[in-house]
Image 1 (tube, rainbow, N blue to C red):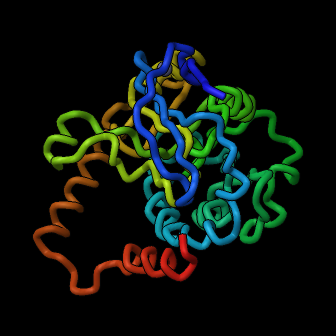
Image 2: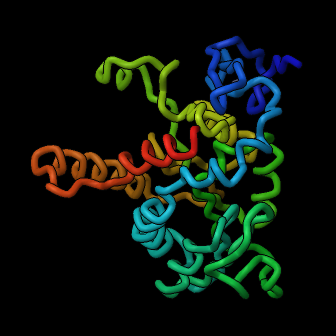
Length: 273
Ligand SMILES: [Zn+2]
């Protein structure tokens, strides 16, 4: 079955690249000629992609939560009412909700696919009195969505503001600097088969227009769709800090770099993925 229109803007899509998913399925990916959104052909392998063996490869989970914690806290304190309630959508085991509650923020968890382990009694089902949440967060969610627009409609029913992470397609300049092509971009992650919605900044602009929201983005990982007007410097600072940290770690490489990349390869070999 061939999808021939973009899930974001309904424009015709062109075949872009073919990837071997889960080491066995040859899958075509299509790219929108208008908003550059990338989507695969019909996703028939997803059940397999979410098996426990694949999940064992997600060893960056704790690291990511620790990275986002201070950034999200800062954005909430600066731009939102920190006394209100918040929802972590697709919140997984509830680790982020727990971390934010530890920081004094009234966070709740929503996730129909995952057991709440760290934030029991602070689940969406436990929320009785809130009409709308001050802000909805969604980390590592958007690239997994089969129907992004439908899911966004659901999210905006919970809140007028969505703060989310998803890695954007690198632009021509970045690709040239790294001597890479978009075809071999790491975010396709064919070994897990879970990334089925790959956004460009243009596709996020289309989404913003569709839902009549403002878009703020660091141009790479973190994005905010909101009815509010916020200080655009907030997101610029996040970007600059990331570059600064990268530069520092290049000049002063720590003797004990993270074992995450090494462990990832180790588990991949162990599980035959
Ligand atoms: Zn499109």
